[in-house]
Image 1 (tube, rainbow, N blue to C red):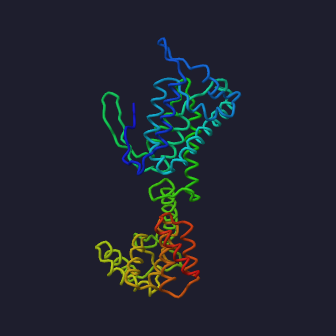
Image 2 (image 1 turned 180 degrees about the vertical axis):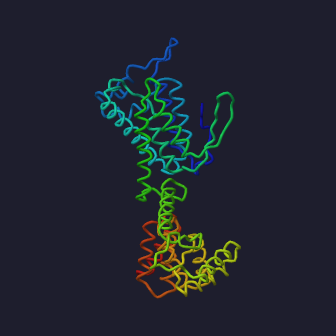
Image 3 (image 1 turned 90 degrees about the horizontal axis):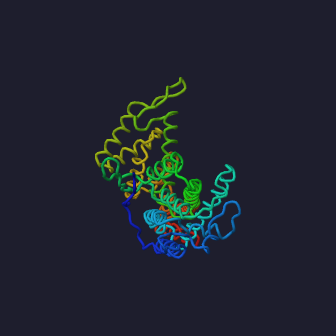
Length: 386
């Protein structure tokens, strides 16, 4: 048995909407059941609010998510909603979170009905419970906080805890194991859960891709972009130059020429000085290599460090050249937006090329997520237009 008991992050703001949704579920559960006489029965007025897949009414796509079948049912759902919903509420805001939660309930219901209709099973069984909406919230947590650490309580022959990254817990355990591999519990709407996960993951990813939701370097979209950068880099290395080994990674044809030993030695010395913390000395050597136009490529971070050093030294033309080389080779890097911003500032303030400044600043403005950097970019563009 595995049970997540805490995460290593707390919301920055009080998640009032998540608390309100939990409270609403608890109150509705208490009002919708008759607990007298030692029995727990759903009151007649609540029956019409269950989701009836064979002939659903419009309101049922929402109301079913606020009804539950037992104390254990509502406790489990509210526990997981509290575990994952607080931080999602923090990122989406109270109004956005409410809309997302209700949309997750609707999408889960639609998914359950469509799949039940295709299979011809479960179409006559009413559905209740917030599990689909909570699956959407959990999917959103996976996208927004994939690298956070979740502490899991386990008990088999003995009891203990283990820390697991959220992406592995949610993908492997909660989605595949609980809803794909072990679908052996009767009266559980597994397809509604999967539809909820699909909605949560897909919708939040789209919000990040189209900048409808601010992203950071730790969300799933940033992870996917870094993976794609590494993939593209490995592809280029497999075809051509290996910047870490200091040599060409493919066999040389008669028409291709290896870099001379002096050039390779110079590059190795640059990397050696960077590793020793002598960035100024490495920058001096880099300028020698750049003036010789050897075409040798430095590793991504090393090239960025040198460009920043040139910027700090006031060598504007050399800094711009290094930043542009960075964009040529590592244009998909997570730092590329900041590099475009720096180029825009260099060309706007220090080099007489307003057209280039505007071009780089507009490219940066569309993709920057940091509010301070975005404000700086907007102010620079406004200054240029005046």
